[in-house]
Length: 238
Image 1 (spheres, one colour):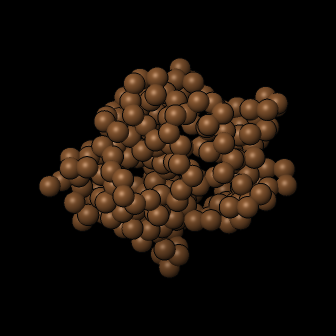
Image 2 (cartoon, rainbow, N blue to C red; image 1 turned 90 degrees about the vertical axis):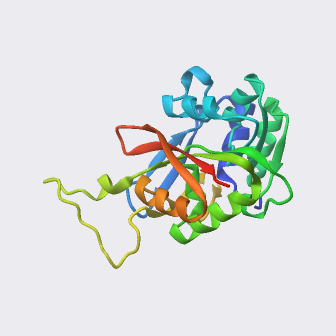
Image 3 (tube, rainbow, N blue to C red; image 1 turned 45 degrees about the vertical axis):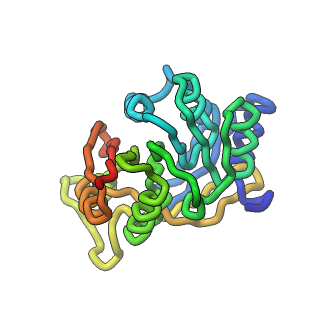
């Protein structure tokens, strides 16, 4: 990443420097423009939603926090005494985590990480979205197998976004030629920084279970929210 396409990292560092109430603008091909309030990315344990607290409590052994962002989850795990490594592709996010005292930080693409193994892989804030699309989910699960120790677990948060296609009468309108409805495109902006359009995956729990079983994982849904969001634990079998 170069200095002009790291909006998340730039926003995190600006907040640490100034504490200014800034926002990251999020565009998508599915919904109207939205924003992420930067201060929320630095939330403490008691400010985290129940789904995140449950995921952190389920972590065990050595943990890889994938797409760690500000490092709030890694810091919470450190405080609980766990051995956690925070991974992010954003140079700014890595610097922000180091400034806050995250002990082990890697600037790395998850799909290029090799030679290390963990007991828990953590993907919060719809983190499984890094798969990009269903074909990418196959790739993610296969790569996760190479990073997990025997009996290891993948804790992930995702959302069934079928509700976004509902009409006012409750009927669902889907273009069957457009691919899986959970494959979305995003662009993020902050000041003069822009990520560029990228693919993001929201996967419903039934399809996740099918893909997980194919790749040797047993699936357990630990939490289901009111907005279609859920927390799943995929346990490596054999």
